Image 1 (cartoon, helix red, strand yellow):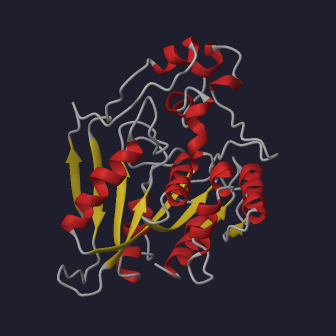
Image 2 (cartoon, rainbow, N blue to C red):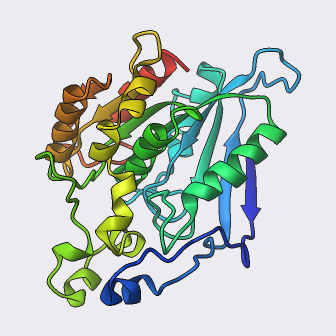
Image 3 (spheres, rainbow, N blue to C red):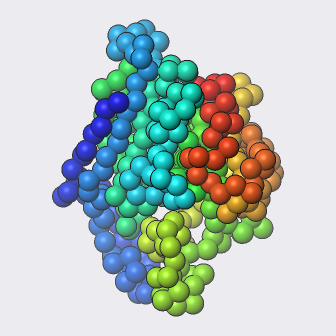
Length: 295
């Protein structure tokens, strides 16, 4: 296993004024955001890894649900569960490279007034991995806000990512045909928003205005014809797997229904709806089977 610590202080990706009202502008601090520093990630290689092998290795990206490598509801990291503490050992069993991200704040892997994690992943991490290792197709796995990140990364960038397994993600839509996700506007006062605990406090910080959320909303993305066509272009094998958990059950069900409405292929399971999403959850085994069927 290899660990990397990237000191991104002073590095700024884009950021732009979004024409917000004064109150939202104040919340967003009209900022050009710097990437949180430090950003870390760790890579686990299969025992038989061969940098010169003709066939590249599939890569599984673990998207965190909280700061660092631990989970919101558990202390184990994704790498612990997938590669180290049981007989699963995804890296060896499926001859894959496993990479887990670690930010110093809860992340929704988005580019907004607060963070540029999406750009970091696409413009820094993936090129670095590709230059350093014999990488093939990239797939994603995550739960809670990490699952939200895995979901929108696949749907926004289907040419970059191959598949995604998502559990108990707060997709934050009303699913009545109107893209009105809750955000800062859902709270009557700033004090109400300030009392939120992660990951939802981090949602308000990342998307201080609903207009910032719209490009990442799964419902909006599902209705896009180009996204639907890309998601169907995999020989009949669904590129997206969804699992409910105890916290976002109705949202995951509603998203599945909306994906069906727009003919977006996906796998769906509510077998573990009474379990809080975490890396220790039973959903992980099914998710790995789903991903491994077409890594």
